[in-house]
Image 1 (cartoon, rainbow, N blue to C red):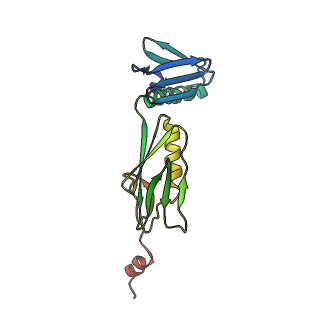
Image 2 (spheres, helix red, strand yellow):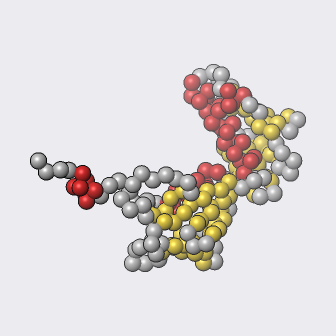
Image 3 (cartoon, rainbow, N blue to C red):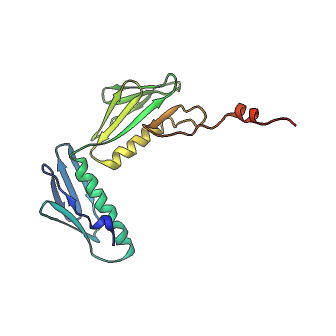
Length: 185
């Protein structure tokens, strides 16, 4: 049995969850999120708790049980407290600023890179090197944070680029460091 799938999702006060056929719609003070559930799973709401039940006991349905319980939990949590991803821009001359609702990066290219605002997602900039991506939909927040990150992937030789806050980057030694380690016989 799926241990995660068996746990009920507690619906906090201020959040309304409506079920329409196979779509779960969570609406709260910070926004709204929809989750489309496969037909093999049945969603029930009772006493402020949402539960998922399997219609069939086959491997595919068992796999989906825990996944969709967690996706519904993420939706219910996201409409009360926003999901956030923090990124940092590292490098000499590299910076970011907010222009209207769009992000404008200077990343060592011959031009500035503009990252357009996406619906239901907010961008914040702390200083000139920190970016905060936040929104109700955890999956969309993570996806956009990754799209921002690949504007300039972290360089493994110098450490420059965009990375998640707290991400540890293993710096490789350059050619000089390798050559210095070799002794002539």
